[in-house]
Image 1: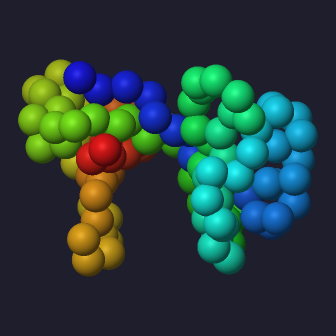
Image 2: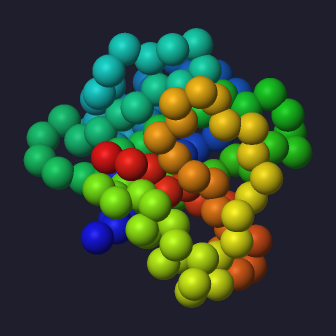
Length: 113
């Protein structure tokens, strides 16, 4: 099974974005943010995580979905069969995600829970 686990939102100022989106959505920080990444989610109940990623280029892709799964490799294979394609990407050591593109070229990540 695969589900939308997070929307990743490109921002220029992490702290400002955390303040704005937490107030706007009644969200809270889910863990201590780093200088270029923060995760927020509902204060109460369930909801989709909003991940805030600092971008440094105006041409950077600002938004994408993270799809969470317990079976990343199987889901990646299934999505490739459905028409997704792999995206050339520099993965950090131990990366728990794979970057793909839908048939229109929109990027998304498949993330191992």
